[in-house]
Image 1 (cartoon, helix red, strand yellow):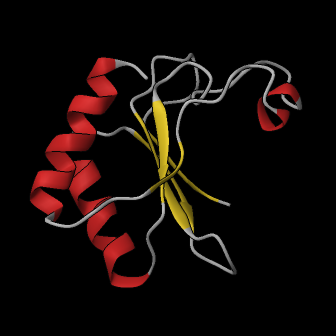
Image 2 (cartoon, rainbow, N blue to C red):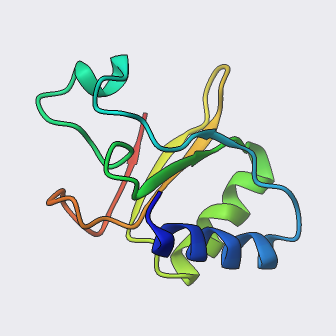
Length: 101
């Protein structure tokens, strides 16, 4: 994981005031999710983490992420395994960007 991602995640957690369980952090390029892509994504570059949150906590986390300069945010809030993807970019992907899964 890139130190700058860890620093911003800690700053967000300090303000969030509660645990932020990481459901997906660094993934090796050979990880099945990464291997299925045309080229490895931001998780494989160590610049993204998925935080397991839902409901009001998810809304608050998105607010704090924006406040702390996170420029790429993915939102998965339906069904099982709800999470917020926080990504500091630097991967050549569009930024800023917010998307849903």
